[in-house]
Image (cartoon, rainbow, N blue to C red):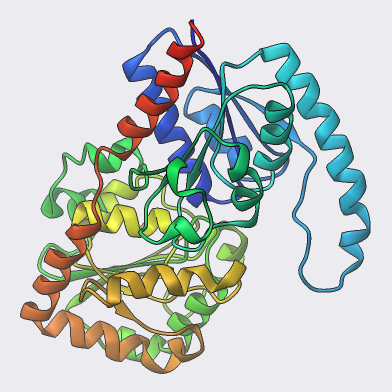
Amino acid sequence: MPRVIISGGGTGGHVFPAIAIADAIKAAAPDTEILFVGANGKIEMEKVPKAGYKIEGLNITGFQRKLTLRNLSFPFKLATSMLKAVMIVKKFRPDVAVGVGGYASGPVLKIANTFGIPTVLQEQNSFAGVTNRILASKANAVCVAYDGLERFFPKDKIIFTGNPVRKDILDKKINAEQAKQSLGLNQNKKTVLIFGGSLGARTINEAVLANADALLGMKDVNIIWQVGKIYFEEYKNCRLSGQKDIKIIPFIEDMDMAYSAADIVVCRAGALTISELAILGKAAILIPSPNVAEDHQTVNAMSLVNKGAAVLIRDVEAKEKLVTGIESLLSDEVWKSGLESNIKYFARPEAAKQIAAEILKICAKKGA
C-alpha cells in the first residue's frame, strides 16, 4: 500500500494543486494512504479536510524580507516545526514526500531527505520559489509548468507536466447560460469576473471601487467581484453593493460556475489561476501582484503576453487602466477570441495525472 505525504500551502495557488495531485493519486491507486502537512492558520487547514484528506499543522511562518520583529521568532518556529516534522515522518512512514511550495514543505521534505525517503517537488511558477530551490538538489524529480527552469533546478530532474488544477474545473459541465442563471445574473449581459486570488487583493479592490461610477455606467455588464474574506467587511456595503447585476462576495466556492459565467476575467497572475484560465480558454486581464518573491507573477504574466494570450496591467496602473481595459476587451470580439485561442497553448489538463504517475512510479520501485 503506497503511503504519500504532501506538504506545503499558504495560498490557494499551492493548496488546490496539492489537492488535485492527491485526487489523481487516489484515482490511479485507491489504496494509497495520503497525509497532508500544512502551516497552522493557513488556508490548507480548512480546504484539505473539506476535500476529504487528513492534515497535520506545523507552527511555521515565512522569513520576512524586510526588517521586522516577527523575524525574531522565526528560528524558534523553524526548530519546533522541524521536530514535529520528524515525529510526523517517523509515525506515517511515507514512501514518497511531495512538496508543493510554501512554508510547511521545507521542514517536511528536509526531514524526508534525512531519512532517505524519496522526494518530488512541484513548482507552479516561472520563477522558482526559495524553498523548492533549496530542496531541489536532493529531489528525485521536479515537476514544472514553465520552460527555462534549468537555471534553478538540475536539468536531469525536471519533468514538464504543467500545473494541476481543481477537478471541478477540469470536469466543467455547466455552460454560461446555466451559470448565469444559478448566480442570479442577467442572461442578456456580458459578465466580468474580478478576483484577487484566494485571499483577495487590495490593489484590485481599490481599483474597482475607485472606478465605481464608470462600472455602474456599464449597463450591459454583469460583475462578479470576489473581494477576499479579509476585505469583505470593508467592501460589502460600498457604492457597488445592492446592485442586481453586481455580486460582491468574500470567496468563490464554486469557481467553475464563476468561470463559466465570465466573458472576461480580471485577476492576479498566480500560476494556478493562469493554468485554470488556459484550460478553460478565458480572455484575461492580468494584474500581477508586486508583493511576491522575485516579482514572479509578472514573469508568469509576460509568458502569456508574449504569445498574445493575455492583457497585462501593472499594479500601479490598475486604478487608471482597469475600466478602459475591460471596455476595450468586451467591445473587440476579434481581440477577445484571439486571447481565448492563444491562452490554450498553456493548457495542460493531464498535469495532475502525470505528477501522480511519477509519484506512484517511485512508490513501486520501493515495493509499496
